[in-house]
Length: 129
Image (cartoon, rainbow, N blue to C red; front, side, top):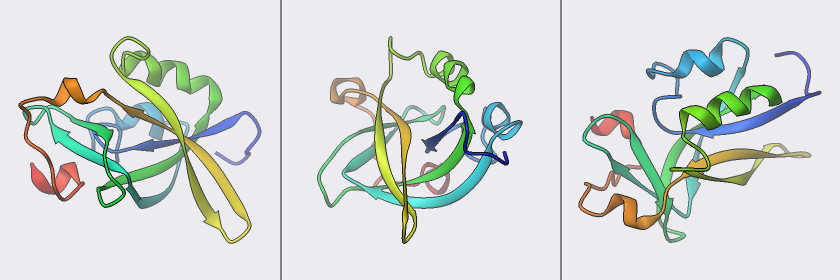
């Protein structure tokens, strides 16, 4: 992706990450930006199939990949994530450079959807599989 025009950012932590089952959806026309650690979120494992993120405390951290994608691709990601039916999404703020702030879409679920599932304390789904 060469232009910021008609683009948005996406913060991913599961099957959309590099090497993940669905990464091809965003990698085909998107651009990997960076890997970041974000606070305020907890991660849970859904039986090795994919992780869930839920709101946590300021001390909770998960690892995400930041991607820039064409804005029209967000509809396809919404369908994959069953948004707004199953997942919810919000925008998180990231500093890319000293003078550049971007907002990335981030998918998460409600706490009641992770009851009984194991927590991934490292915040990195790949390292806990």
